[in-house]
Length: 157
Image (tube, rainbow, N blue to C red; front, side, top):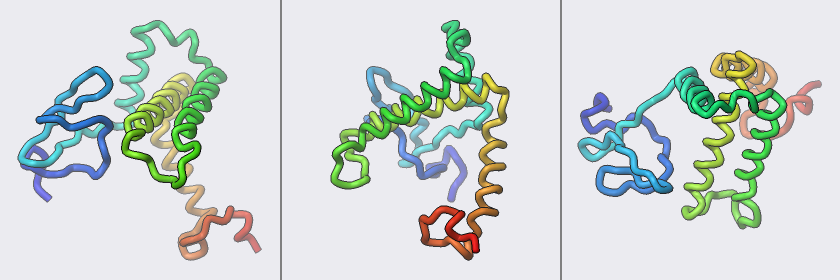
């Protein structure tokens, strides 16, 4: 793999929107892609950078007053259900191409509210995820659970 800026693909994630001639067209706005040499150079953000951007967005609008933990938990649930609604009545669990933009928007809404809640409660969300993965790793050892969707209590003897 080549270095960023030299035609390297730096990630395998999909961007939301349509790529048109070096620009991503998306819901009424256009952003530069960093497209060079036939491949995408995706900008990576840390969880902390994303938290700061969401907090700045919130604070510029004086919305902190509405962001109690209860309200944020409810907003996460509402947005997660809006994501779920996009799959309602689908024959498969796949995302139809025409709904991909809406799926991206709802996923971003869920993430924004999670980051806001982490900010409000002063929780390091990245570390919380790492800690949870470690606990889940102990509950679901690879050699015992590979290929199975059973709950960890079903593996206890």
